[in-house]
Each structure stands twice: as structure tokens, then as C-alpha cells.
Amino acid sequence: MTRLGLAIVGLALAGCAPVAINPGLVTDSPDFMVEASPATGKRAPSVEGYVYNKRPLLATRVRLRIEALDAAGAVVATAVRPLDRDIPIGDRVYFDMPVPAAAPAYRVTVDYVFWRSGAGGSGP
Image 1 (tube, rainbow, N blue to C red):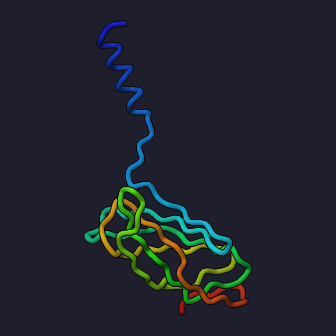
Image 2 (cartoon, rainbow, N blue to C red):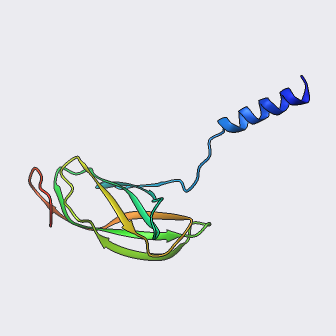
Image 3 (spheres, one colour):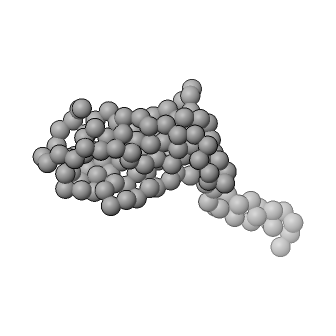
């Protein structure tokens, strides 16, 4: 094979390699699963994702803890922010929130929840 052929094959293989830029984090607990990743295209740094309710109860007054992580995974800043709506039984809710500090990665967990029986609803 010629050098040109090898170069073309090498470029083709490099283009197929998976690239992870700011990969999202998944936090799982018995009550919730949170998928979060840095948001792009915003003026200020933010994190976006979904909170999944795994319990057979309505989750209300939910507050999310957002932790900014350095390259080694250590927490460098933390903020607690309210979610703007309830999470119905077995459902998910989208969020997009400002972060406490710009960082390579973020971890989002549920900091507080009030459980209520009922089929659903939205709002505080």
C-alpha cells in the first residue's frame, strides 16, 4: 500500500474513533436518577439534563445540588437550586440551571424532596 493509501486509511479510522467532550454524569439512587451534562451555547456556564422519579409518589419541592468538579473529580464549588416543577410518578423533568463555577465536569444530585401521594401535577 502506498503512503497516500495509508494516510487515507489512518484518517478514516481516526474519524470513526469516539470522542467524549464534556461527557455527562449519571447519578443514581433508589429514589432518583439524574442525567446531567454541561450546556453549550449559553452566555454563562450552566448544566442541563433530566431528573427521573423512581418512586410511586409525586416528588414536590425538589432542590438540586450542583457540584463543580475539577479534573481529578474533587468538588471545587457547590450550589443548591430549586427545580421549578414537580416530578410525576415514574416520569422525568428537564432542567437547565446555572452552575456555581466553571469547571471541567458537574455532578447533580437531589438535595431535598417532599413526597406526596397523587398522580401528578405541576408547580410548587
